[in-house]
Image (cartoon, rainbow, N blue to C red; front, side):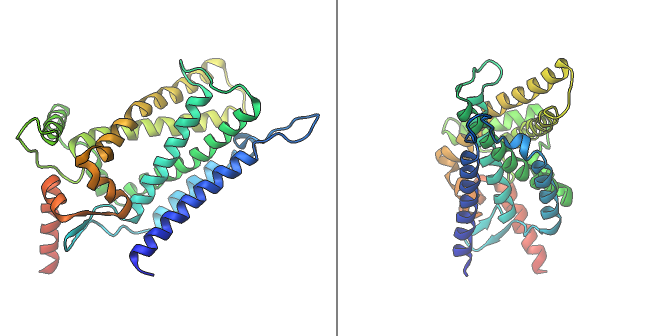
Length: 293
């Protein structure tokens, strides 16, 4: 099986699994029984599943080894298989969580469904989204623990003022408004700033999500419950504002199409890497020269 066929098989397998879990969630959400009208809610029936997913993510991270970025002729490997798995499982889970969370109502947004069966469907789909989001996020976090140098590529390495200044200059240049070009590392300065927000927001969502799951089985004071809900909903609001910006700058904008392709195939063109991620490309060239010695 060649690499391209294997890659396609992986995408089909992942999409099939996501569709299967969502279908099971919808089907099992229907009422059963005439008198008791019992309903299956995964947050009650399968409350231990997130812990299992958490454990699986850390075990997988400990067994897998990253291949590392490298120049391969006219292409540059930017995202290996593990990077793509963590990105798209987290992305799918995040989108499913946000869609169902908004429909269920949060903060100042009223609930969009009143029917009990439809509400159960949304809750169970929310649960499936949580499993994907938890797996992707924890697999990413565990990989940073295994290879701590990777964390440095996601976080700012200059002052906040400098990072913002370079981010503005980068996008005004990409939009054709300025001629000054900022030589960028693997992730642009705006991406590094966003990385801080994404990490912090994801952490709040995960911790408050586990707290919301815990209070379904134990009694807590109304104040604590309110704090948990506000934390979860507030982080959701931040993510709702951040994701569209991330999607536009990282994939929809014309200058980002090569990057978006790289999140599916793993590769970007040599010319793109050299022009738009100059510092990163120079590092890869220096690394390859060192390996040849």
